[in-house]
Length: 312
Image 1 (cartoon, helix red, strand yellow):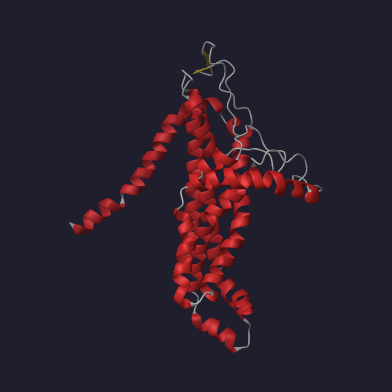
Image 2: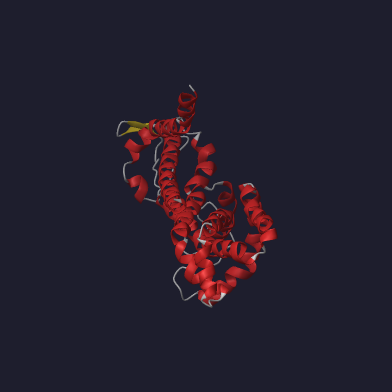
């Protein structure tokens, strides 16, 4: 009975996941039929005329002028997430190496706990910090300097705007991803055979050489896996990005311009979509959620598989 009970409880989460996927597919199916593949390739998101008479298009009732395309959301989601990883991976890996190899053993767990506490901070707090601190500082000091110095690089020139945009979202997301990377890389470093480390020191290697030539090669797969795990966190972040991204309905022309992500867009557009009497706007938002869920599951599954192989 105990074994059967455990098996029953172990099936709860997979059943919930499958039920969630089934619900999203059912709710999004009218939009999938109406939008087709153009949903992923166009930037034309228009709820249509709220005061017009709904018409039948391809067998579906929609408002006049309604069209849905999310390429700008796909671009914003992927670019902000990869930009966050560009900042977070070096910081997280170096922090993990510092905690594991430099911090005295007596205070190592305390320092690690302080770093990992960042993961417990609500995302809206990160968004508020970005809104109050990061946006003004970047708009007045960082972005003008970057545009002046790096303006010859495509994407780094042009107007810097008011501080809302791709770069700001990437920085805020990076701070949210760092604790995940630090905790998992530190765990991987702790699993490295200490005999290999001591052998490096015995051969006359410096601490830097031991870390770079002995430790890092053995945790390389863990770093890749935890980077993908951090990517999964960044892809699904909502409130923090919504507060600092500018929520623009277009592909940003440079790294400073406003943009939006799939998760943040669903939140920002839900109220307007609910005013559509045909329901197609809500169905299209559900289709965005379905795409985001599928991407998130694939990314997190790949990361967990790599980390599991490292632990084995």
